[in-house]
Length: 312
Image (cartoon, rainbow, N blue to C red; front, side, top):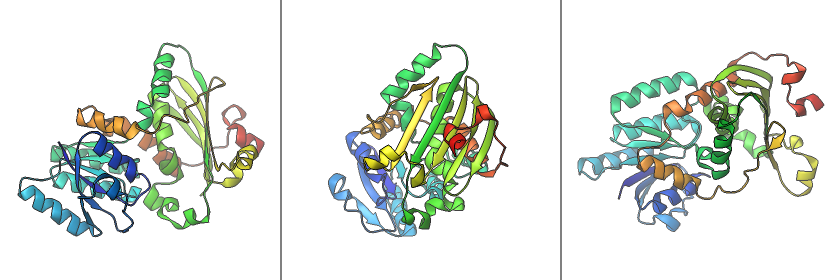
């Protein structure tokens, strides 16, 4: 049985990590969050210690380590800008880190994290759950048997309320920007499917939207990310749905709305077996979302423009 610590216990994604720790037969010994709304711990590890101050949390972990009862892993579910310092906290404790997306908010920090990992002798693992989704695994296997270059359209719209714009999620220095915060999984998936990035264009960038064109070894991708409720198709809104996700490959839709309930557990199983996803796996996606935030805009050619931008 492995011993876990966890940061960000009050966050949206924390229950998936708590469930994965429990379902893999391991134990949470301590959790951290500046918020106190962590009743979710009762459903999984009511005996875990809980802290609201990072310094005291880390001191507790150090005391455990000095008593030869230290944690083996630190699971990180905090806002994006805290990922790197909490990964480094794990290394100081002689533990591996299991960190939510994105590992870091810019590519230079990823390279520094690679150096810190090498010095520590520990590992940082990240959550790339789309890589273990059965539908997507089967699709990747099918695409690997096909030749030629594919035409891909990626659309991800999740309409957010006014509250969202008053949080860290829309502050670039803390979130890494819109593409990093809501798009990094999709850019990882595209690279996993179609290989190395060869060319990137950003056609539109605002606090609510980003769109552009990405050329990969085996695909040409028109992509759009949005948190604007106005971008959600009217028929979805009429059904009370505030999100729209669509991916087509050569005009064929890829449907993977279901099958997400146990993906974090599958990732944890891989990590515990030493086969998790690390810095090398996530590097291209981190580079892409960094570039999307920083690079100059490019006037789009008709063939590279996302269909919804063409309608605007």
